[in-house]
Amino acid sequence: MAIRIFKNFFKRIFYNIFRNKREIKLGFYGPPNVGKTSLANRICKDFTGQEMGNVSKIPHETRNVQFKEKVEINYKGRTMTFKLIDTPGIATKIDYEDFLKYKLKKKEAKNRAKEATQGVIESIKWLDDMDIVVIILDATENPYNQVNITIVGNLVARKIPVLIVANKIDLKKSDIKKIEAAFPEYDVVGISAKYGKNLEEFYESVFKLSKKI
Amino acid sequence: MGKRGKRKSLGKIKGFSIQFLPYSEIRNLDSTGRIKKILNIVLGNVILILQGKLRPEEETRLIEDTMAMIGHLKNFKGIELAVISGNGNEGLFGKMKRGLANALSGGDLGAVTIIGPATVVKEIKRNPRKIELMLKSS
Image (tube, rainbow over the protein chains, first blue to last red):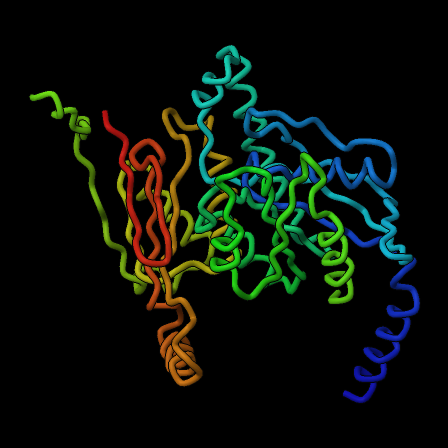
């Protein structure tokens, strides 16, 4: 027992010394088409000059986990190094016919659906590897969606710190209060990844979240 | 129908089945057994109402297994899922009472889980006050 207490004590001291130098694995999770890649791109572009992935109006554009290592985020004189992990949107159903509405050919739509199902599985598998997670929700949509609740529940069970981002606040229909009411135990930051609105508050919250690891 | 008589059509619903599954039927199963039992029912085009709820890791496992089946089973496009449970505003005594009841029963019996095949259930709309099952018309 005493050995374990000592071990934990030294582990914590060691961790605190090197925390700022260590790469923190920051995952972007959420349902499809909420702007996970848009936000990841925005951060990457701001701090590395490069983007992470393609964005599209067609759901399930990101069908593989993609990451960017050693992204140094500077905020108010502080610097932290992150590994940004952008994940495919998690869904409980995928119908290739939904993609036909976006004028994809049947073969393309079927292929996209197949890759999207594999992407969902891959996203879930990566949950165990995250240090902190940003759950991105569409502020114009109903937040009481089981996928959102399932992701939060899994992160709580794994003791992974969570920040909720309400994206698309530039749209008239957006309602952050609804998201805050749905997840009262979490910090909710409203942003527009598309226009880079309110990112200062987002970085502040990410730095705060990183201290909880 | 008159000038104002443009009523919303309900469409033709062929009919659907609902099955209630008491928690006692899955209590002694491991996660694999639980998911298998649930998916077997849903694959029969049945809307399942499960007493209680799955553990978070079982919910993700259910999503993973569902995704693995899409494309391999004809006409299977996934599931619609919703869990209705207490909002946690019942106070300390209430929480303790619920915790004790859950510990004795082995699961959260105050919750209800609704799982339906996506080919039958178009959407489950929910907010803190109500839950609506939108069915697909044939």
